[in-house]
Length: 383
Ligand SMILES: Cc1ncc(COP(=O)(O)O)c(C=O)c1O
Image 1 (cartoon, rainbow, N blue to C red):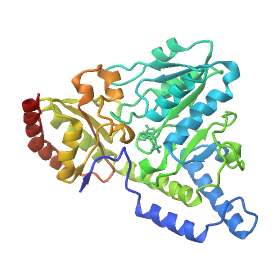
Image 2 (image 1 turned 180 degrees about the horizontal axis):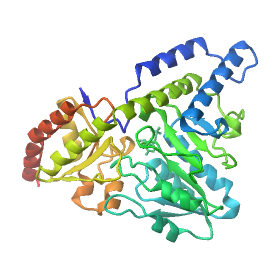
Image 3 (image 1 turned 45 degrees about the horizontal axis):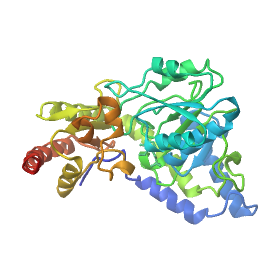
Image 4 (image 1 turned 90 degrees about the vertical axis):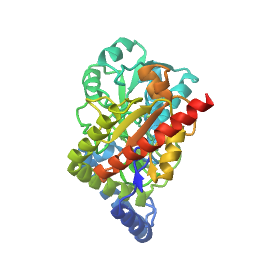
């Protein structure tokens, strides 16, 4: 089996599963309980929080555990928007964000907020100039992702953060779900106020994630209840998931660092090979893009048909983000980048893990050489 859909979700490490199971059995207590089971669980939670804070070089009080990236983006954006409502109602984001950001912003538009969706250039990037131009007196929040989930394009969030440091009124949120452990991002002194992570994209478990909330930054909670997570996210903590997340984060940082060269080589190999093939266009920018994502449009071939044909050969890829991939519409990301041309409707996303091998890429290319001409021929007959 060749799995090239790691941006949708990744295989949990054995060590992560082992940690989850041991914690779930041995330390099943509720961290809020006063008896021994509770206090042991609470100590373990504290240890996991400390370990994640050390890895990310932040304070333990700056971490809020969530159920994943979608909740994290909702919490950061709605939470910051509602907390700053008295100061303004304008939000800036980009047209290429994940649906968990775009739909959250669209929802807020129905609740009195105004949103600017910044355009991107043909490499899929927003510019600091565009951010500056979009700022209004009423701007309270900027939300820009780090690594794009479809193309791997890296946004200039460091530059934007640096400039936003001078804009005291404005909070800056970064969706780091695709970049975490693959593309470095400093949080401390970065101008970033809020940052979202998800465990299942880094070989942790589904249902766990976290939001970095910089000291002093206030967000309105989405969930009300027992006041866990410093009153920001009520609900009994998913202790085994959190402990497993700490393990996944540490191992992923190590393993993706070790695999840096092979990831880059495989990416280059796939990009060059696609460029050499007629009717294939590469949507991932050559420069300033993540090492694990390659997006290619196969003109004249519907992506869902290519995906099915590859699946029959036991090669697993996707077109857009997993949650949008059942919709047979153009990719919003590619449409923002290139306009509503065929290119935006025929994109395929290949996303690697640190274990992806050159042989996997070569097998993918031979499979594409076999199936694409046939799909195009059938397509032409049916037109
Ligand atoms: C960039 C980005 N943000 C947020 C999410 C949502 O994360 P989760 O699946 O953990 O809800 C995803 C998932 O694909 C993503 O790619």
